[in-house]
Image (tube, rainbow, N blue to C red; front, side, top):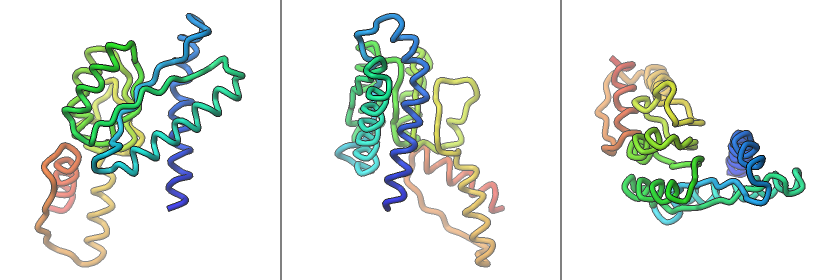
Length: 192
């Protein structure tokens, strides 16, 4: 579990480093204003542990970047609790857009990403998701950047393990959302 926490901090640090380029553009426009970054995470619903760890890691990374740049590069994290609910995620990104936010870290689930994607694309908002895996959302040249590989790789591993264990038939059960539907479809294609 400690390794996951360290890895999470590293990934979030990389996220902020990635958006530092965008921050440089804004910093040149206004040295006194921090770069606004929206954070869409589940703080009270399912996956709240991942959401809380994401916020903690981003706060550490933002503080380190501010210290290393002697305050020339600062981030204002506008954190919104999506409760892992796609409708809440859409409401949150609309609110953040009205506040001038053009970089979003999160949301965590493919269902949330699927819900906000049309809005993000239409409003030129960069979305960096740490948890979305649905292959249906792996669309070239859109505004969604995902750190997780899509579910086709996960399906390859699952099917290889099942075949290694001699499993010849499965009866799948899954939650009806973008991420799990994608995993089901990817496993089904490779298992046949």
